[in-house]
Length: 268
Image 1 (tube, helix red, strand yellow):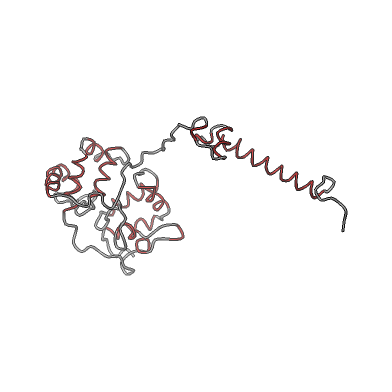
Image 2 (image 1 turned 90 degrees about the horizontal axis):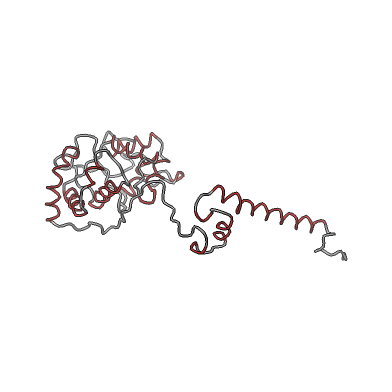
């Protein structure tokens, strides 16, 4: 057995190990506490001291800038969607909504069915219409026509409009999702690109609270919304779900989904 001591600087392997560890720690400290604070402008990383406190898990209120709220760069929706939202509407609310809807007929039709490229509202989920009206009013979603129209509506007005349009009959012959009719992006999604089937949220397979019913929407409208989500000009989707989906869709998939929901051919 060798009498040479392992933990001594006379042992070159021990020396190399110690110096290597020190070098790695120094590089990590430079990256974490010098480079990162200059690259990140968020409050927890502004300055070396803030970065150290943040890395150590110190409550934000204890260090400089802790009370600063980082505002999002875009206006996001403030509506909290639940399955119970506007699930029960009264006849009075529907009647008031019918009167209010007279100003909406030019774009959305007399009975909620548009002859233009505006969305059909007949039979749409009440919670979806209510959410979109609030988003237009609050600026989370913008449109040259809808934003001014929603600006002076009261909360009850928006609930009544949503109740009225949701009470109208949907277009006949609603198609079901099937391998024979639906394009792959609708029926199966694209799991390798983290895209769930459209039908999993928008009906056919399942429905997610806050997701609109799409069957019968004009293809030009659906395509425009997918493109807006993809390029970030529309940002009122909850938790960025539609933005993540749309930016991973190909132009061909966008066209196929829009055509399918508009009932333009079989759109395989």
